[in-house]
Amino acid sequence: MMLILTNEPSFVFQWIDYNKLNILGIHQDWIHYIVFTLAFLLFFTLVQPLIAWMIRRRTMLLLTYMMSSLLFFISCLFIVFWPNSLAETYDGTGITEKINIIKHVLVIVGAFGIILASMNYIKYIIHVNS
Image (cartoon, rainbow, N blue to C red; front, top):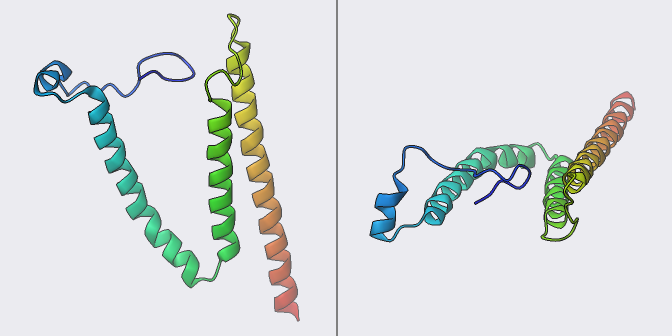
C-alpha cells in the first residue's frame, strides 16, 4: 500500500512479523482490513452519542451540515485521487494541484459552516428578542 502524496509505504506495523503471517496465509492487506475495520467501529461508537445528542437537541441543521460536508469532502477526495484524473508530471505539479483542490474544498465547507452558524445565531437572537 503506498501513500498517495509521498509514494512511501504507509501503515506498516513494526510489531507484526508479516513473513510469519504469510506462511499462515494471512497477507498484509488482511491486517489492514482488520485494523481499519476496528478503527471504523471505534469512530462509530464515539460518534453515535454525538449524533444522539444532536437529535435530542433538535439540531438537524448541524447534523445535515456535518453529513453533507463529509460526503462532499469524501467525493472530492475520490475525484481528485482517482487514477489519471490529474496526471502527475515529473516536476510535481500534479500533487500541488491536488493539494490546492483539497484546500479549496476545505475552505468552501468551512465558509458554508460559518455562514450557516451565523444565520442560525441571527435567527436565535431574533427569536429571543421577540
